[in-house]
Image (cartoon, rainbow, N blue to C red; front, side):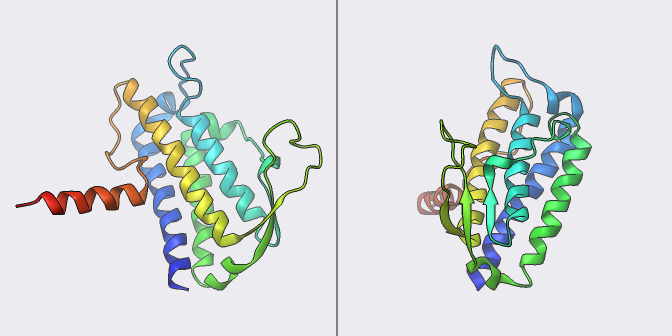
Amino acid sequence: MAYERILVRENIYHLQQGIELMERMGDELYRRNDPARFGSGPGKHFRHILDHYLSFIGGLQGEIDYDARERDARLEDDCRYAMGKTREIIADLEKLLDQPQILQRAVQVISNEGEEAGNGAPGSQSTLKRELQFLLSHTVHHYALIALILRIQGFETPKEFGVAPSTLKYQKSLAEECAP
């Protein structure tokens, strides 16, 4: 069960990265949308990420419905509120560290993007572990978009923000190979 704990910790680590960035950003930059340069501002991306984690937590007993996300607009506009919700999600994930075997649980996943979305289209079988892997990848992907949006506006993000753990590991190995 060591991998399961690592996976939970990686998700927590990335959520904490988001909190740290939100603390530096503030509400104005967090909620800023500039349709001419980017479709969605940082707040919309953070809300989207948190919605997926909330769907995961709500589905721990057997069905994760990513199509029935709450889409709480306050998560898009209120940085402090989003940080609080992120801390709640982290607390829920920390509970999984005491029972990593639960991640083997089979779940039904509803995520029907496209014409059939919301029309009762069947979901897919998965496990909680696989969904945490998805959430980690999904979060890093959206963090990369957030980093780009912020850099366009002259706000610097940590260089590892929005970079996949496997990419960071690879970059480190290259640096070690090239070191004298």
